[in-house]
Image 1 (cartoon, helix red, strand yellow):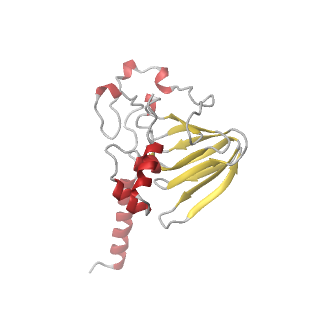
Image 2 (cartoon, helix red, strand yellow):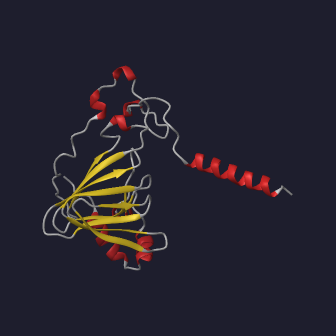
Image 3 (cartoon, rainbow, N blue to C red):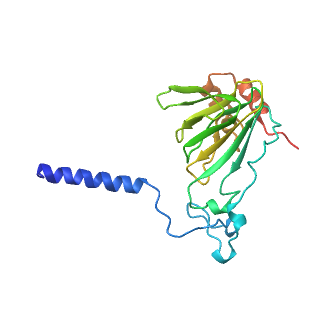
Length: 220
């Protein structure tokens, strides 16, 4: 049997090692501008040769103006991630701008790779997330206020006002990913079997088909 003090030392050592392994590693270079055309991914994109790096790799003006909303949910997400800003590669951060019509909804979704924090630019929103204990944490937020959605949890935002609303979202990932609950379940390719969805939602199969038709991407 280990002496009590030795056991305590081992517990502390294990905790320190576990914490270190759970954290993102420090960067080993100044920058690693993404080069998607290489086709190589090692938990991120391959690096562009530093001699070919320019200031445009670190710049994006796409969040300066409201996006044009032309969908049925009444919201639009404009991402500023590594796909738009190659210089974000390996840096572990990104932004989005979300615009909402009056009554517009950013439907329930998750970000599997990031925690999200939103800052309200204008308007007023009802926001919330659901814990794994099935508890809803919700609040009404307005211009200048902030709300946090923990990594991986289902969350939403809805414009509860009569005017346009907008937020800036920040993520601790260069590419947080988005899993939209309704779209993922009802418009996947190949499709989730009707009987699976019918049983999961306790609805008739014909209603599953109706929902799939409603959510199907519009053909141009």
